[in-house]
Length: 150
Image 1 (tube, rainbow, N blue to C red):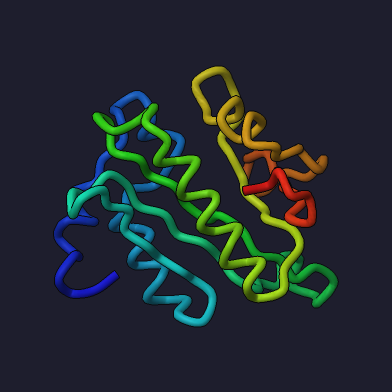
Image 2: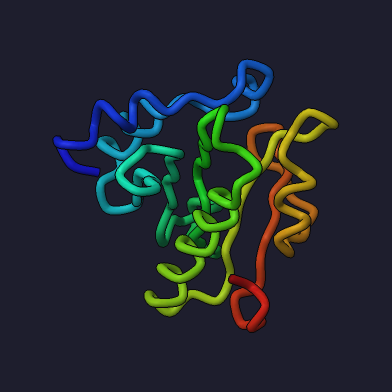
């Protein structure tokens, strides 16, 4: 994220029927400002055209007691007209690469449960629910030691 692409990022909008399942980019950018050592926001472009936004979390104390330091995908917004073209898969692969670069072996994500949520997308990428819930959402994990994981 840069001052030059801020407006483009703010213009990324998911489909109206998905708005309940993912916070808007503006909230992500506010969180990135509040958590500068943890948040990793990125605009996803194709030929200079904004197609999505992702924000990873890197090295958070998940249980706030030092027992589980985790990294993962905090937010993924693929623009309504750009879905189904591989940009989400690309975004997850980029987060996986960054976590691996930092020595991590797992990528965590949470998703809104239900038939209208992104569970199928994440399961299709190899994420598996780990039995936890966070804020009413399913927690999934992708093993990054597997060569097929991005």
